[in-house]
Image (cartoon, rainbow, N blue to C red; front, top):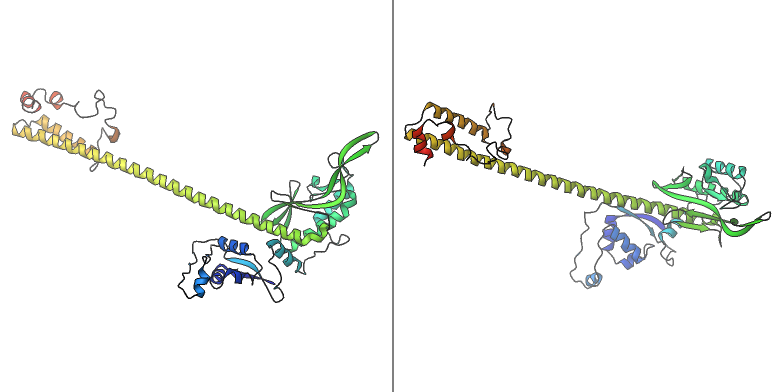
Length: 402
């Protein structure tokens, strides 16, 4: 078998060229795994009965590949080769494990003694050889993580084996392009920029420990090592039928798949929040547009009302002037008042907006909300017959009495 890369378009062409059952004979995949890949990449599959109609020469429709897609455009598949006919489909973990085991450049064998150890292992070795075994919760064990070193917790009897295992694991991880970091007394493997917490410890069991005439129950070491991916979807490998040294390829494969899973989750979360931020931006833009529309409409309404009021006032002034001319009562005082009134109308008119020395600091839109004329909000409180023409009895009689 060999690993190949297939593009989204190539996979789309493949699923419409032959049935899924035929495709699975070429690749190490189960039907569910293959359909999951197609679903994730938004590749439509032929509906039930498509191939029967196709073989019968009946007209069938092919569903087009959607352009509304921004995910992975390539997928890695294991292709069967001659001699692989009887092999069953491998799980992603098994396939990656086999790939790792086939890489002869990887130092998967744990040596019988430390050879050119990593600096983290040297620091851990110094801690394990310089400390006395602890008491309390883990009787007879030494923890390296107390000194911000790699997270190993073992008894002196298992320290050499633990160091050799971790040194080999670190070297394999580095060879695969990954990193190791120590942060706040925890050890992390960095796979695809995702942090995976790991720890190596010796398994313990409950036992009664005597100290002179005193006896107490403690967790005492068993000599069996345990390597753990310490997160919510963690995995633990313990000495059993196989020692953990013989499961390095499986451990490495699991770490890499976990890193890939975390990266995918991170990207999906990031995509989700980007979409939420876009929606929020659209919502805010809509709200801002709605507020602007309302504000603009209020301005329109206000200006229309002011314009209508100026028309009323202009008609009023014109009527006064015309009536005065008709009655031959257009004196200088009235002319001055008419000129004054038209200047005020031009100041108030939204189409003219003339300047006015005395009223420019007034808000035209709120001019009559708090009127100086006994709370009135219209022009009825202003009576030119009383203010300007009190001495013109003919004017009062001929116009304002009508």
